[in-house]
Amino acid sequence: MNPSSIRRFIFTLITGYLAIFGVQQLPYEFENQWLVLIPVLIVVYIITVWLDGIFFKDSAVKETTKAGAKKAQKQSSNKGFGQ
Image (cartoon, rainbow, N blue to C red; front, side, top):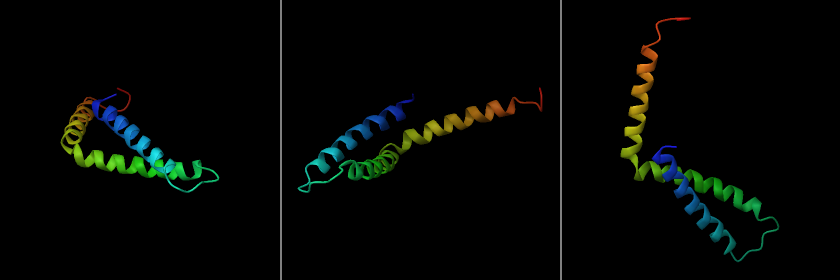
């Protein structure tokens, strides 16, 4: 796992916990709390990925550039079909 994946995972855990805590603090009683939590956690994940892209834009660009350069080098070493 690269550092950005670990960072995003920890960021998602923190925001997910806060979302669950916030839903439980609502003054309403839900018949099935999971019907509320699942969409909330999906939205939290989307917002987390978006905020991670905003806050850590520099490191994400550097990592994708390095990965793209490695793929280009691997593809250029292929000489043809079956070789």
